[in-house]
Length: 115
Length: 116
Image 1 (cartoon, rainbow over the protein chains, first blue to last red):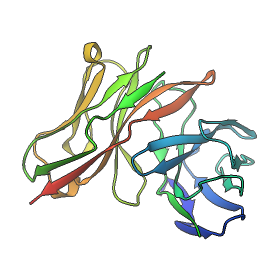
Image 2 (spheres, each protein chain N blue to C red):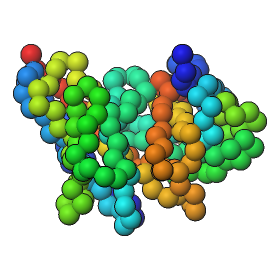
Image 3 (cartoon, chains in turn brown, blue):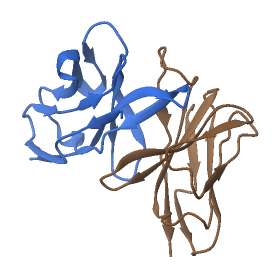
Image 4 (cartoon, helix red, strand yellow):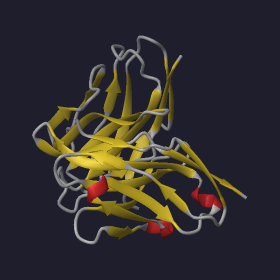
């Protein structure tokens, strides 16, 4: 089935450690996104990428890093510099980065808890 | 600044009753509007979207939404709610971002509870 796969679903991290969240899509979409969701806050954009080897910071990029070496993959690293990393992380993709008939599709999300 | 407001944090309706979830946006250009639904611990599923044309948009699961430019609103409606509709609902507007297009601005969500 076509879709967006995020892994792991649940992840626990000790303070001071970096962790990487995986996001893979087989929809042949050019654009990919990472959002962070906190209770009562809606979704906020961390990073987005419109094409391989290109990515841009979103609203809350500090303490995060990404790469886009392959069209289907857009991993997110939560670094130790992120002050409050405990959250629900959502990966998304769309055919392209514009609104001419475009829709953003979401993965099932990854829960990150800092212990 | 562009924003999306969902005035109701939590709504409870009886099964079989009608539903309306409110969404207001602030955006200078023609908006691209979306409603997504999220079950607990899951990703977001697209219910419907408005890009242009008919201002009454039909979506999945029996939902519809009406775009009213004069009121800057895009309210979601369903004539008869089912227990399985209990979830959190997010309104979003698509906007240009940093010179490129493709960012979604989300409201903070409305949690829907359904009474038997």
